[in-house]
Length: 158
Image (tube, rainbow, N blue to C red; front, side, top):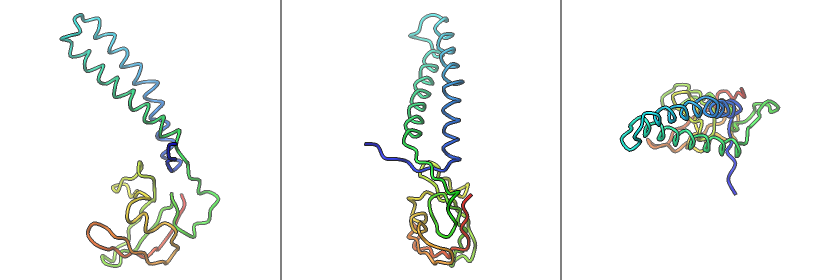
């Protein structure tokens, strides 16, 4: 049995859009490219044909991957919750007690995580440490550089 994948509504919609684009635009385009390359004759020395077949293989693989993720997706809806504790999908502002700076992270699934966008995985050390804590709690997270201590300043569900 395959495991469900938690994700935000925004990520689910992005994956759906990617899948539609691959099926409606990329797949027909690569099929056309293969047909055109075939018309150029000898396939054994046809680089265009090989490139198009490789692209087709990549596209089909990505379609299957997206279909699998979407089939296993568990979209977390935060609209009915009051933001009193950190849960999957929450946006959390933290005060880093060592650097004395504030940082803001959104707790997301592994697939969505992108530290440059302020999105951390619920399975990351900081993400795991934050889940379940409330406003004003002090949380310690074991990170590669040691132990970080954060104070939860704000919790939002967006």
